[in-house]
Image (cartoon, rainbow, N blue to C red; front, side, top):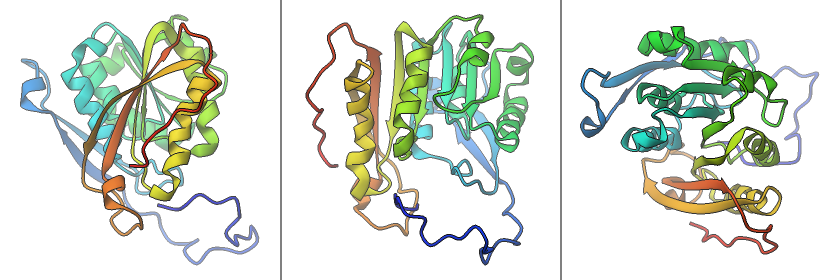
Length: 270
């Protein structure tokens, strides 16, 4: 995974990269297996899905935090049943799929408004939960973080969302404010934002975590740590502590009744 940099890394818009004319890699096929204790009678046991071969926004990756979030929602069905669910930066969209399977009133799975990305989510949904797509319970929509939310809210008849899902998005440091703007606009007064992430670049862990400082200081969200868990590192050849790169952190955001904090939150660097 590339490091953050404010430079252009020597890129020239007039020079074709060496691999410019190479064909993109083919799509990859995956299977998500639900834990037996979470499967309702008559419900699907697995989710079969395809990821695009490559995308500059990393939508070709099956993110660990997305897998963890999916299992979490599957074992906490009260967060899904009868709820309005919004996922930002969905990519594989597994949390959205499991929310729909577990009885959500409506699910809006969003990613960058690129036709290929949104069609891939829709096609995977049609393969696994076609009746929920046809009944407009599951919806795949292109959305740019921080942009106008009118079209999103039309899907719910202008009712705000009970749960907003953000899985492995915090490495997009320049987009933290935009993500939070969307959460602020779309979250119901008693709703929750589930944020799960890994610091894939340990030297930038503080920048990843700064999302929560911004959430508290600029948007007056209450930040609560939920849990940490571990999975195999995603980018094995990358530098930095494997301990940090294998850890998935889970947090929740809720609207605070308290005045805005002025002190910065403190987080351990692992």
